[in-house]
Image 1 (cartoon, rainbow, N blue to C red):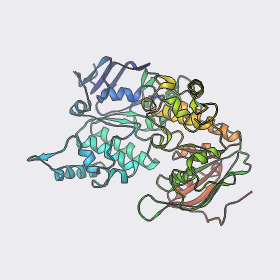
Image 2: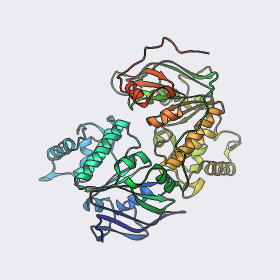
Image 3: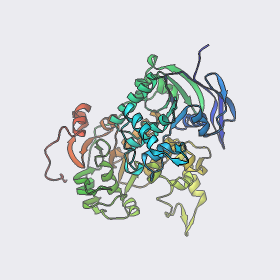
Image 4: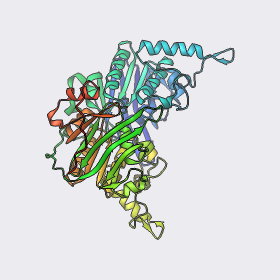
Length: 515
């Protein structure tokens, strides 16, 4: 009989209106990287939250090294050597890196907090595992990739040997993803055991030893990764064949919808410009992608166009209307739809119901508002239409609290809202972040369909495969400036990467081409 370091046997976890985990068994070997794969809302995060003590199962038991254990809360999990990096980090933004790492296990000497001992251990761990991060930096001042390193150091500081990573690469750059994969391999070589939730099949195939697949809360099977491929895994996950190629005709761009001229955006901290003298057009019937390594100004450009950030120079024209300093509602009414990069901060009101989130930008329209009063009947029927059309899964349908939904279904809700309103320009920032392959296929089809209906699409993506296959034109940003413009069918990923890293730069065009 094989010995397992962790066994989750016949786990059932229910929420109002939904069985999130239906009699699931998962077994983890010592020193292995075990991937957990499934559609958005399949129950992956719920199962790991049961293991970490955030939820209590209705049925089933958990064993560690063959002994039944009772995990009532995360402190119990930590005592058993189980640590978790959550999809949405559990960090206190106004605390330093060091303060976050020791929070809850603060070292004391004679009744006084002993930060020196903690600092020494943290520095040693960061050097040992190449997790370079400043212990005195405030969380709110460091990048998302560095915040994830803090979460990993929290587990190492607590001497955890069973490590749960919930969608760890969803917010990382390609370079940071490669670094994380190497860190995980090093952990496994040391004998640590890893449970790795991911939607990204290439990552699973490159780093995992085995993969367990869930679908709609049920266990589908466990496979050895070396004996499978993307097509088999995706079919297990969604129950059908998935088309990994984006089918689209050659674009036939028409008049300019968005014209950005000499745009400058200040950085949030310091005196450096986040974006400087950026100019480009987006035409009706095309998908223009802004590509670049995270932190090179593309997010600030998108934020300035959508009104989330102030433009400090230049002009932004939408359908020849100057919207440079317009309020966000006026930009929306003028024909701008926006799928934001941060779905929690800018995409949803998490404590609103799903149906109320669907009408956030339309609640004053006659369909939803009669003489100053919201029409509950029309709002409900509209929400049901969108839930059906975009396959948004939740426990209570239109009445579900947005906070309670899985990250992928939150994303689908935003996409449904933005694509169903009247718009001429779709700004789509990281639209498939955190989505499973089936949902990615669907979102890509929707974006191409928007283009083919004559909409202008501005895409911002860190996924190079998405950049190359979805875009009609690509502009690359490096250190706040546009360093090149390309036809993705005429450039390789490798050459594009040289421009993204600053190793190459095109000669600067003097002006944006007009009609």
